[in-house]
Image (tube, rainbow, N blue to C red; front, side, top):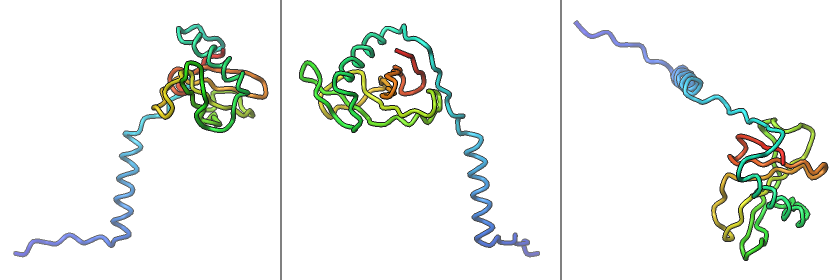
Length: 137
């Protein structure tokens, strides 16, 4: 007796089945977006470093163009340009710019320490963990 053959799905039906399977897997395994915390003051150890960096960036006029800028001690520091507040944790309806806290050799990899500045108001936040938390300076 011959083995019954399963019907073959047409390619659009196969594609739909594959996509549905992938979407269900992604929905189950993808982590929920992290929510940043915003604190009204900064008392961490590195807040003093962030305040010092902020003073220097302020003296440079808070540049808005991303790139390397000469720093003290023959080092360089980087500004990434505009920070878009995608997390929505900082006050809305404002334009922010991001600046690295720690200088290094020009072209070296960036670390997670940033200050984020609202140039219109001067409000400044320090984030030691690349936008996971914000501390008001």
